[in-house]
Image 1 (cartoon, rainbow, N blue to C red):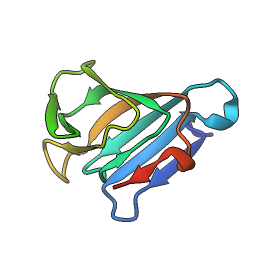
Image 2 (cartoon, rainbow, N blue to C red):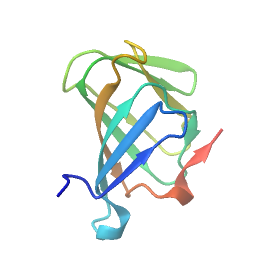
Image 3 (cartoon, helix red, strand yellow):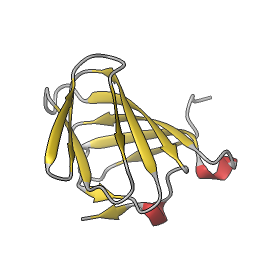
Image 4 (cartoon, rainbow, N blue to C red):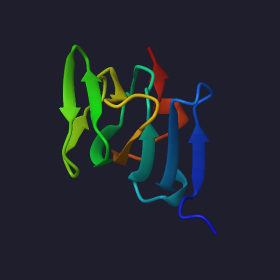
Length: 114
């Protein structure tokens, strides 16, 4: 038995997302763990995301600003409409691991690549 409900691996190998609480659970929120080397720029129309650093160092671009999560437990919120992407400060050899809380839960319909 696995600790997650679903797993998504980006075709380019730069991001793996493990969903723990999904939109199908009916909770109104989602919880995932993401191992990020480099995510593609995207936005959400409805969802607020909170990234909390678990391991590594993560740079997060939100619109035209870059933030660095460098201390475990450090968090950042991303609001609807904000274009965002993230990348590991240590590159391909050491993905950053983040806990992702989303409200409402993530859905493919609300994930818009830019």
